[in-house]
Length: 286
Figure 1: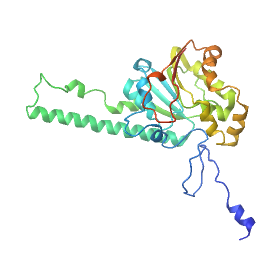
Figure 2: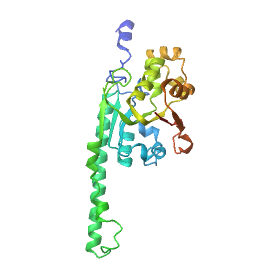
Figure 3: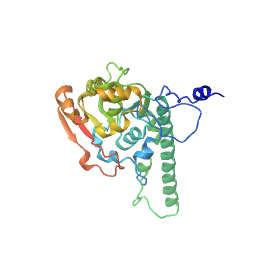
Figure 4: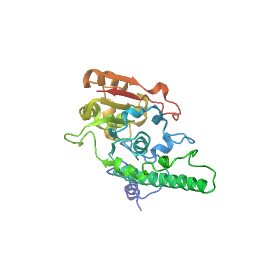
């Protein structure tokens, strides 16, 4: 084989439609996800030993209970599902640009429902056994029948749904409104792929989709995070050089240009984040 033929065979694996490297070679290499659509994102986002994402602890139930909610850039859906389970949303929709991550999200939903059903059945069985053994009488039960017979875990299937879509470029839901919208660690990827215009489009669409008095929960990545991902694609590299809006200006733009009336920084009470993920989390009201 000539040198020319050898060089032809050393082609760089293409980026597939989901923004990830494709090909049959199974070499260990850093994952490339041009939209931030990493596989197993939460496994390295959350420290081992933590049962749930620490960001959940700074969320307020009143923002979600009996509310219609939207999670932009939901990845594998773990935050979406946890919010539905912990806070009792009326409905919550997770949207992501990557169909593979949407498949992961539905897989996680089925897994979590099945796991919670097993826990519920175990609680019921233990309570029945305790009653048979005379350990607890009807007046001093620690687990009442009403507590055991709460909503079946399968009710999450009625509350949580996922959708593949490009929120910035193609999302269109005429008449649809939400009480709460989340956008966690997404702005950098919107910014690098669609520039300043894409970022403003993101913020404007969120504003239009929110009900009056609705809350927008935003976790923007800092500028140093852009620097480390600026060469993830040619588009990102070009946009990076032309950006004029920097993360430290987001609050000003959201208040003065987009029209949010109030902002609260939730980060002061945030603890347990893994190194490299200490990012501000903001709540903004329409």
